[in-house]
Length: 391
Image (cartoon, rainbow, N blue to C red; front, side, top):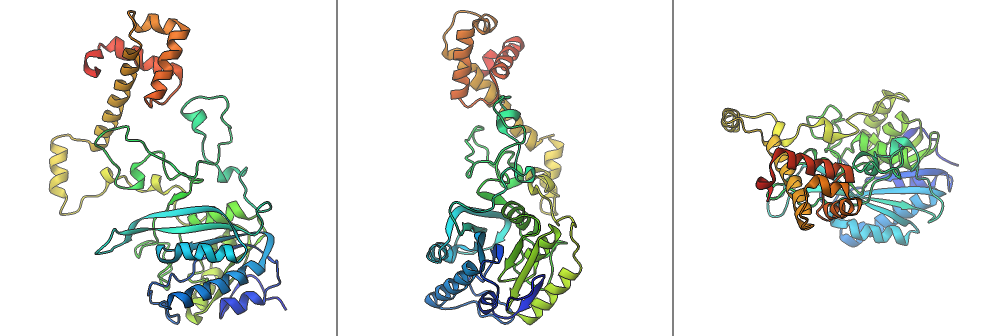
């Protein structure tokens, strides 16, 4: 007999999933214990490695059984067992589509190694050819750089699915970004590196009774992309019930399992306070909602520095933009000089062949924009008489 949906079932997830009808679940999201000694109320998070892997294999096999043939499985896991659990998932019959990195600020502080500030999110499917991935849904796409930057007619007006990795070249020497909101073009929704803040203790989103809580916007991205309205979403480790809450808000059916009686009760209460269609908590674009490093609030230790900066009218953000503009000017002028022409920029640009050579050289030097953009920048430099400053 299959278990009822629309609720959290208190008890062991393996036996619970075995009571579901085979092939009844559309999407599984699992955030299991990481086996790092975290203090849960009833679960011992410090098993021998072999025992942990054996248990992980068993619950993933149960999840595989519960999934439909075209179902999707997402696994959140830390560094310590990420590689091992990926292998166990493959053994269970899953196929890996993406290995996503969830990056967050205010990482877990470490004393003898670099601060831990990411979690692995594995995107598995049951069938290599048949699975849900709503790439054409406008909510799952991002603006096309072809159109916004290069004015390329080949760009899709509906946007695109971004690359799975974004590499930022050092276009401005001797500068760097401290936090994601300082970067303009990375951590896009469809890339394999995702930025969402952790649910810290001061966040309004914090449920309070469970320390390991996923951001609703992160879960929303997964559920919107890998399921349809009315599909069944399952979380074997309900915890704070955030997965099920997001599923309910997005008009999906849901079912969860939770070993702890207290957690199950608290999660059920949260679900009872959630309505279908309620907006997800948190910003869908956290880089835009959080202040940049240079706009943060000064505390007592930094007030003196802030005052000194104000007195000297030193706007760091403007300084970086000025450096970037100067770097682009230098690159455009270098492209012009490399042609070694005895004619003015105006005459060169009037020659289509030479103008194309100039634009090709700009592209080689990493200057963004169309041919006309590069030409306009060159003409402005020549008109302003700044060629001596960019040589």
